[in-house]
Length: 248
Ligand SMILES: [Zn+2]
Image (cartoon, rainbow, N blue to C red):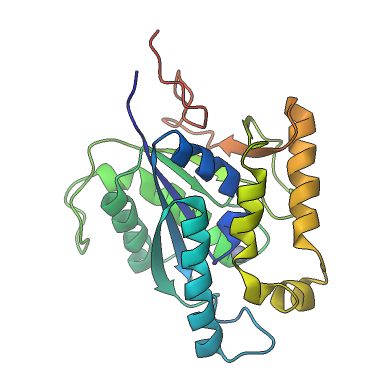
């Protein structure tokens, strides 16, 4: 079957997607599928050098460059960092995000990641995925979609606290493009990522993590995912690249 998918990747901060699953998104784009990158927060705390408004402006440009390097359409949701909470109005923003993009597949943070922006985005997306197709929800902007998207989680930053992955995507041919996409977040290198977390070289992180996942599945570089283990996320076909929808 030659159906083209729509993919929504929803993350908390500019650069999360480039770190965790850009190679997979690049593969989707190469296969001709439509990819949206939604970023919940502006990144306003992501600097030890700039003011909030300054770093927000810088990161908006970097986010666009990252999305361009991947070939995705960028959606900035406009929350401030650390201000994504599990409340009803925020949940409705995520219902509307899913309705607006009408995805077949959603990729997002694991609900057990290390910081609440990440885990709350994962939770909100998971809790909105089914309801995006339900009618008569008050105070939503977009009409219901006609199907329930399948949700996958990308890796947590340290790969801690979650079950082992159950899906792998070979990104050997996309790894360099992924690195280039991550490189677009110039403001983070030598500033926040290093000063806040003490990790000097996040390119080494990509090299180590994607090589290890590649080793596990028999290729040079890979990204790993878990499908959400609740009904109706499992499908009798493959929705991650290479997409294999059939025929039976
Ligand atoms: Zn983040």
